[in-house]
Image 1 (cartoon, rainbow over the protein chains, first blue to last red):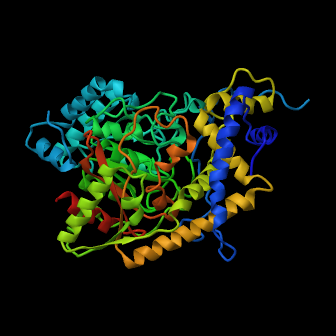
Image 2: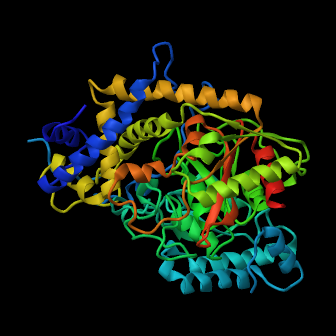
Image 3: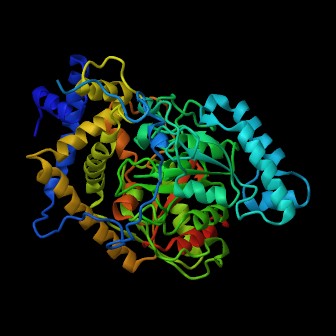
Length: 95
Length: 473
């Protein structure tokens, strides 16, 4: 299949990315080439094959639900680009 | 000071008084400075490493030193190291300081390793040439016009260029083995889940594994023994008992080995590499091992399967980088949506954005089953077929790479040609099995060639001892 510039823009919105028209043009070429390459998988009949979802050999790893401080409030805030004493700060989004 | 290839040599010279951890660390720091142009390090912890070296010297004298005392190590810029930067060589994590140690890093520290710095890599470990880094490309010491491989390029060059003894990298599709092959050293990826991923920045979680780059099998075995094993902070990590790999007895059995026919027949594999494969096969046979060619009809489906699944997982894993909690935040944002969008568009590099887009696409409504579920089914086919092969044979032998180190910029035009460079390494990650790249000769230009061995899950011990027997030739 081939994907249009409009569809790429929609995917970009879902991924919270944006591209200039120039980037978008270069990008669609690459993107379509890779998709065609990926479609090679359709050559294989997989009707009776279950998808492989988990790679770990461990099953239902459980532990006691104990309250622990693994990261303090201040440590969690320490890398924030913008914060106050208690919270991460972002532009206002409720009017 | 001479170049050390193993911790054993280091310890022997410390015991004789020829060197100390401090003089050794200073030697590596001088080498880092002299070889700065290779761009292997993002950050060097000179004072801290020297201070730690002095402490370890005292511990050695007191007889209280850990297993890794005297080992100077570097960390790929994807491993959390408390109080130190980690940013996956991406602008989007600019200024990020880790608040905790990842499990593997903590275990190195607990056994008295000296951490000398963090190393350049492809952004978020996505790449095969170390050209996709916010810190610029890493150069191969053997020929600085060539790439070191990727994504753990800085990690491999740091060991190649004698700036540390061992490095930890990460391997999602060959990111430890391929650069080790391009740099003429040992690169090892264990079974999936053998080493805790706690504190490893995630790229594709069902493929990611911490790997070891070293100059010897014995150091690889020792480091694996220290960092592997169960961990309360990673519910996927294996609870299978960790053998004392460093005390393994030499491999004396007659092994049965298969090699992929395509490795000797495909026009994509360089002639000099085929020649090294043929020699290796002959030498194995001369020693009484059984070596047989096998066809792997699913070979052509390995890379598309890998790229569908890893981009899907990456698009999900990398959604956390939004400019709110840590790292880079765009100053051009006007509202919350543009804060996310501008931060991500300005902060991520080209290859990472491409993979997030592909991953978002294959997971999107209407395409999910056709791409993502299909690839998960083929992953099962590839895994089961490979396991079937490993029922019959102890090891699978392949070249690590199809060519030796290529020129910087060589693959910039065609996105798929770069992906094809990983054809032999990706299989081990798709199947979750252990694999190692070991150096075997050079091509006509003097560039190192690496061969790869794969084996059954959790059979690292025989993989390491068998590889050692091939290096002793």
